[in-house]
Length: 561
Image (cartoon, rainbow, N blue to C red; front, side):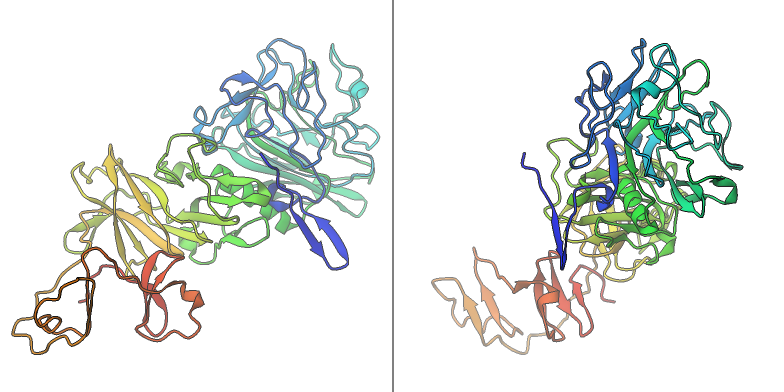
């Protein structure tokens, strides 16, 4: 497969943008993830390698001839590959589980020589879940307080029967096997055990101190109590589980890691937002709101200010080549979502994201991101004369042309919906469902799950209902036609007598048995001076549009009165 290189040339300078999380490549050192460079894609098998995905990056310290991850030679100490189908909470993506049955360490250790003595600021991100509800296990170990105690020196690794003298343990960090972890004097409460989260640690130099922060979905723990006095104090970090008989720590044992990212610098808030957005879309995580989601070029893909009611259970499918993001199936991993809605590029809501049968978006920087009103009430509400809809509603925001997409709505919790009901997806331009309302019939409805095939023309609201009247009719006008059609075009070889005058009340007649009528195919944006009443087939939104004097709108079935 051909690898892609991305170059950006600036006047007077030359900058290479390598593929990186959120497009943030400056000072990137470590980027390991479960869906690349593991040496295996078979469930429950030992990871034989865990390669650094940074362009030109160096792998971590090897052990027993297996580069890219670190393990003591103890029985049962090994990272294990967990497939996407075995851990649905990782949003159709795999994970690496740190397995240890005897307390030996296993995980990923930084390359020798990193971080060096000149590095004073670090930012790291980890996407992980825990298997024990009462346990807060640290993402990595702060493995040395002085810059001179470089944790990557093989001879200076922690004390154990297999390794030499152990380096200094940090006084400012207290890791525990149960309860809460203290960061300075602040308490970081236990994060939900089985719900994967994004955890971000970073530090910055404040005067002569190094100031540390813990950032989980936008929550920041900081303050004077988190400062470590003396500029020489150094936060050496090792992504490692360990129990050497003295520390009592097993910092990653039992944890599942989707991705670990480390930068040798404190990033700007926007850069952290870009990396967090990348991880959130990939793993179905809702960032703390209000907060926009950004692509690798800082463009907004979820605008949290458009309608704050829908800043819940945010997830989406996307292609962003700079981030190596190609999420082709997704749902929100939040418990509140109830795994109710799933989006996909193909009619497949079971297979892993990496399944070869899944198609990607045709264009780079394409996103469809949704959020909902988090309405949990199950009674249906009336809509129209005979239909009913659920109270949960969604808002979809689109970037570039997504084409036809597949949606699966699990409506099995709504006991009022019968297996024989006709299920529709109702789409509109407004949250009240009064503007440009469309009724999209389900392609199937089996075991409470309705499937739809739809191309979102723009940012739209949608919900689901039963027996919705898709259109209405008026009684025909009575009386005798009082005019004739004077002009016509026909594809027939022989004309009927008095054609087209025999067609009443028309302006122009078009006639054919095997030919179609094609109107102008373009996009509304290409019409420089639109005129009220103008019709086009919009090739971007795949619908016939009418210009009403103010805006272009898709022509849909509706009731005129």
